[in-house]
Image (tube, rainbow, N blue to C red; front, side, top):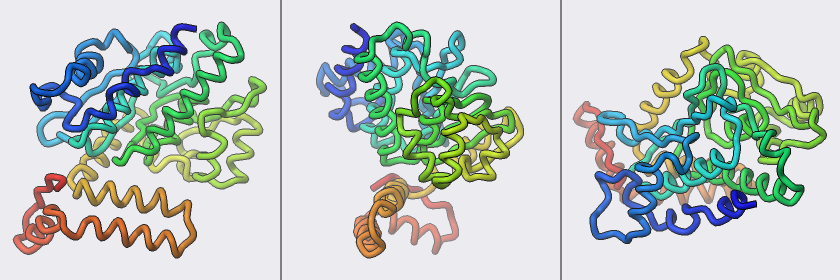
Length: 311
């Protein structure tokens, strides 16, 4: 299947890891390779390569906040091959952009975050093609989870199946009261295959995760917050402003400190306490000789806001 071949040979795998300075043209030095220029052209100037995923940098005082916007209204943001390819390219680019400090994943489609996999496309795939697709989806969500910077899922309306699994791969989840969250896969005689069986129990506990997956039950925003599935539940339509508020708060902090904090938490939870504390010490030591640490002390002494530059 041609599109599966395209997925496994994604543009980002070939070039994006070399893209370090910025994913945005106005900050891109003129003497970089043609390959890097093509990535910029692909992601920024040729949205038709993935019409369902848009990548935006917020301007001015919000510089450092990047938004990945899902935009496939005709299919309720179902993750088809085009969207999956676009997601992969977007997050590979963000991973290589040192000026990005926090990411929002949002939807431009009313009443839906992401309805999950595109079952119409899935129906036309062979078993082998389905296997390749699910593996690529899983690795893409792992890429989101492994980003060094914080990620925030902005959920209004439905986040089902792969849509919820994408949100689970984020650091934070903000939803509106109209949110509907669930993993319906067992109703289709399959299981969540893009991380849901692993990330959900780590977030809400084994017993609750089993009940939600075994029954394929859908829950609302308030219930999701009460069980720890989301961080905040706000009135319908207000998830994006709340997420942006949190992103702005994070964006004002020391960028290197945020990266080290995320690493210490994520990797530390997979270790025993002794080695986890050793990791914390390692992460702390990496901050001691930064200009940002000195700037933070100076700003405190001078009673002003710090001006961090990630150095």
